[in-house]
Length: 425
Ligand code: NAD
Image 1: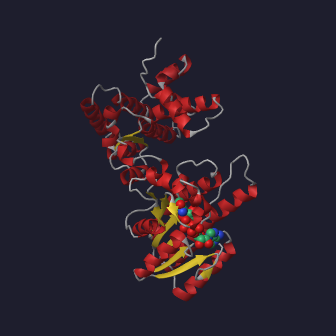
Image 2: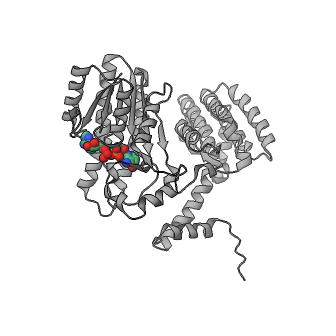
Image 3: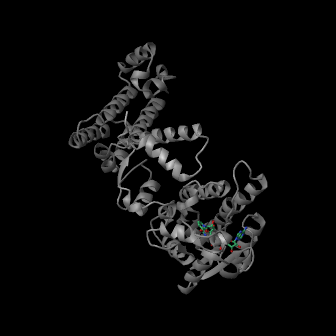
């Protein structure tokens, strides 16, 4: 195994290097200094020189851990554009440049390989005063997803690991603040903050997972943000592989409900695909998109009349539309048992519809059957959470922000906690 580790001169990268070398790998560290090859990952020429030297001296790499990065603080209203740019250039563009250079060498060698980029929990949870850093890490999470789809055919897996707070030189002086370490430690499930080697262990595990790609795996995240993952019993998510894997890894006690509106949208999109294909031969379907997609009760009298006329014309789109209405009806069923029965009937209708987009949607729905049916028990949907969020945001705006997170939590409970305070009236 020939591995490149960027940022391997310090912290997490150094721990990854030690573990890989202990396992017998030939590791080439690229770092600003103190590595095997001096390289500034934000500089395309420097990265090009580093990959050339690596291939010449060691052969094409089949592993990359893209770990180099910088921490940064700065409020969005105050940060200088040059500071913002420095963070994005290093953490995001630099990660892409190193991934691109090593993937190109893997493709040329026909060897396939595995790449892990180091993102952060800050790419998922918003941290005040760290906008550029958060955005750069969120960018890495998407970068690995896109790269996984583009490079999968070449046998290259691409994932990210997002550490929570880890005790490395990156923390710098913040660790010296009185009570900082103790405060965070108290909130962890395991009673200690992560060390570089804890994260290295996760990175190497992900690096060697043979059938995982396009994922971000988090290492000790929620606890560090004052939560307890085991107390989350229900989650509502879209039917995306990355979300499902994230819940499986991190929220082991939680049951998944797939968001009702996301499921309906999937079926709606299938109606639109049928309409677009059919409108090539049936001009009367042109400009009718919203008639089929909108909820019937939101149509004007004229739109309703047009829809009724089109619906009576033996169109494929009209059949797809009826399937969509029937799918929505599933959610009106009075009990989980009824929901299950009607969903299964709907599936067998959709799969025999001879409408390819609808058959694809039906298969996706069926692959997620348990989470679709979980709605009858949990009754949660993202719209509800977004509704609560908009109430909280409105309260925040009225108060011109709250002085502390504690106050914000208190007002959130008052607005949306359904508290019975038994106040005298
Ligand atoms: P660290 O400061 O100990 O190590 C970072 C390494 O990257 C250093 O060796 C540095 O020289 C190198 N580097 C920085 N800019 C570079 C450049 N332009 N070109 C080449 N090398 C460069 O920090 P760490 O904590 O080990 O961080 C490693 C990765 O983990 C970073 O991407 C960081 O954002 C991420 N991370 C760290 C934490 C944490 O709490 N420490 C949490 C989440 C994510």
